[in-house]
Every structure is written in structure tokens, then in C-alpha cells.
Length: 177
Image (cartoon, rainbow, N blue to C red; front, side, top):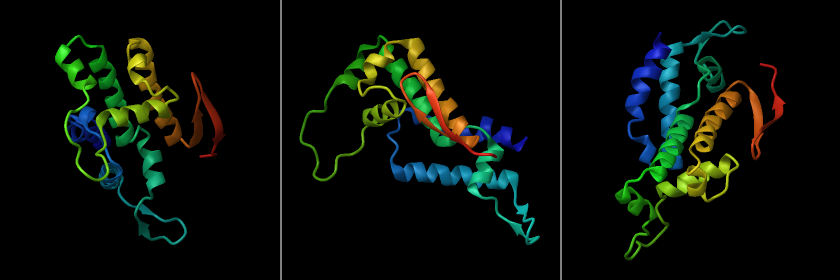
């Protein structure tokens, strides 16, 4: 019951607008910490079989108990889904914003991470090419790719390791959990 409340009430509030966020490593870490804290509250401590003492659940135990895609995979899946929708839509203002290179002097130092760079990285992780805009024009193929990302995350959560190639997922090793 608590798990359903987290999935249907808390997580959507936390992820509101996440489709447009360029998430950094620090943000990823914070989201994972948040999710683990919530899941530890939901599932509670466990009594150790060897020592007989109560202990906190380990991260892997939480992942196995929860069984759904973690919060980062949900963010990535939403971002890819929205990127495809935004690129296919007929709104000229949206296309102008997505295509336009900013004009002006860039600040000194390391460039800030851009939303499009994050989308390119996510598409490349799925085995696609770096030109995500051509892939997004095929609505059904794009939708399957976004769903495949979530399916891969669920497979990893169930204890398998995988390697994504062009159209298939090759299982390298499964653990005996």
C-alpha cells in the first residue's frame, strides 16, 4: 500500500517537469538518495539472521523489493519521450528554440550541461546514433526505444547484467537471485 502511494503520489510530484531538466551527476545522486530514504521508510529495518540484531536494508535489497525502475530511469524515459514529441510537433516556436544556437559570448570555464546533450547521451546508451532528431521522427520506433530503456532498467533490477546492441538486448550473465 505504501509502495503504491509512493509511486502514484510522491514520485509524480518530485518529477514534475523533469522532462526539461539537464540532470547532472550531483542531481542524480540526490535523487537516488531521496528514493532510497523513502524506500527504507516504506520497507523498514530487517532482523539479521546471523546476529539477531535489527539493521538497515542494503541498497540491493531495496531494489529487489521495489522491483520497479528507479527514479533516474523514469526521468530518462520521460525525457526521451518528451524529446520525441517536441521534435515531431508542428509548433514553429518550439522548433526554433530547439534548433537555435545561442548567440553571444559564452562565459569562462566549463560549459554548462545542455538538455540536448543529455538526450544525445541517453539515446547513445540505448544503442542509437548521436543524431536523435532523425530517430525521433519515427514515432513508433521512438516509443519502443523509450519503453526498451525502462525494460532494460527492470531487467537489471531483477539481477541480470546486459549489453544493448542495435535491436536486441543480449544477456551476458544472470545472477541466481
